[in-house]
Image (cartoon, rainbow, N blue to C red; front, side, top):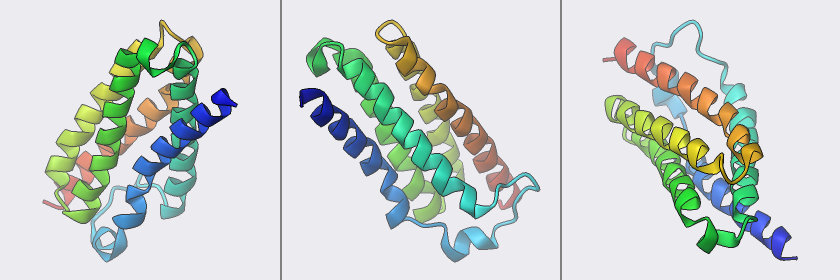
Length: 153
């Protein structure tokens, strides 16, 4: 029961970050931007982020299982920091339309994801590997953010 509740907690926390997308949607502003030819269609983002938030929750849960938050405080704190950075990007980009600030923030997010992978690896290799697709997608998202910023400045 404890493991199931723990998993539910990490899933809830991860999808709290995801919920920012419900408050700050792309809307007309994003539709009006000049976009690169490699910009994915809008329908891609929902399924990709759903899968990634689920992988994040599983990764955090695998680390948490190794003695709880107290035993894994450094690794899980880094995870929570990257999750907060993840949540912060959406209002910066879609809410305030601060593409340059959002790009700086997503670079910090990328570093935090890398730090999370490094911190998770000694505790659970599986957890570390589960975050690699997330790092890859955020790399792509950062390139897209930068390109949108340059094309529309």
